[in-house]
Picture 1 (cartoon, rainbow, N blue to C red):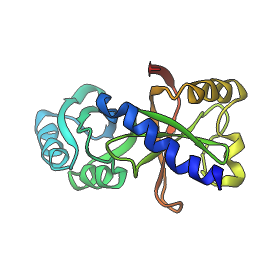
Picture 2: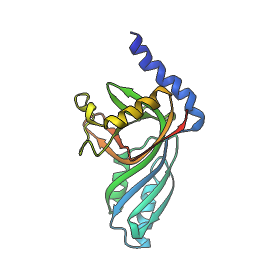
Picture 3: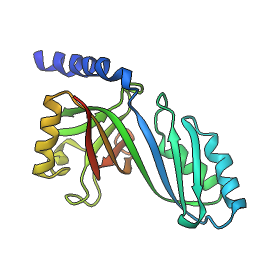
Length: 190
């Protein structure tokens, strides 16, 4: 009973502490095949600007890259992003994000909880440990290395707000859980 109460109350307390930071998805970077000219860029820009959450975007035609600033009150919908890119006639090759929020742990899995969209969790993993992450309880112990697990536990003890950046991966068959590969991890506040 105490554990269940802590599982519910602790995230709410942490969210109250970090709400003033307006932590959330800060930036989304798309890798897109087929960008060849300004006309192509204009076509995809029209589709992406219609997405709920897209505040502004910069298209780098030569790099096949689109950098979008994200509205902190909006959830990140990878399916909607993919559909917008495909509708514009392009192929989405990858999505990266920079996310700020409260570090949480449940059943041995670590995730990032953002205060403005608490229904969205970003489950953390490292590609060095796993090639295609699945976020089921049985496999949660292999998502991060021991060194990273220790660092995450330390950050968790301090109720830190962290910023994690890296590629995103979505498990559609598991309640559309989003995995965030840890490429960079920094404490924003303690």
